Length: 210
Image 1: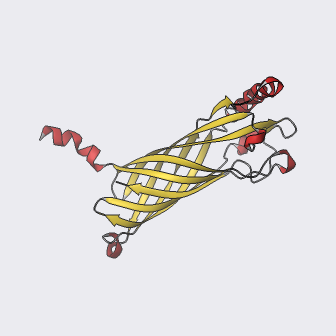
Image 2: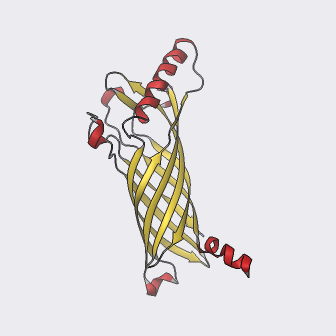
Image 3: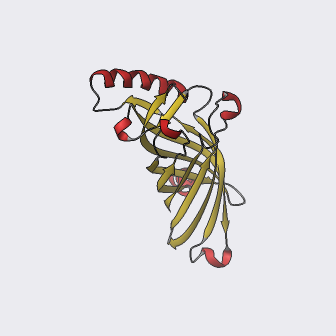
């Protein structure tokens, strides 16, 4: 009985695995390449509170290539043939969420989720592989500039809102869709003179909850 009591908070947790597409808008003209659309993998855990509220934490992993534009004065996403820096994004989120259960439909499989919180993008910046000679030397310099750009002026901090719908329920397993938006709050104080599209992120994907 003591063991069951000790483990009861763990049984109350809702775990999820996710597969998403992450969109990173850009408006860099001829200096950059088209907007990255990246596959991501993630996990979340949510602890129930009264009134269908949950306290959640999540982790998402993605990777893409960046370069540093001296003309624009910022890191820009680039295609693989123009690579300098491999950025591995570790997106850590802490948020609150509300589950709206529709009584007549919940048993059959339908609920809505609304979330809001903060995310930290702990971006690991590595020199891209496969470069040699002058390209490697230039990539090393650009990687240092990219890392400095991402880790300065709070560019690693993003407020986040999300919406989801779970539409299939089998026993204690839900299948649903997720969407999130990350806001470039850092632009309020960083002084970035970038186009309005820069810094935003959007994703949409599939979520399985247990």
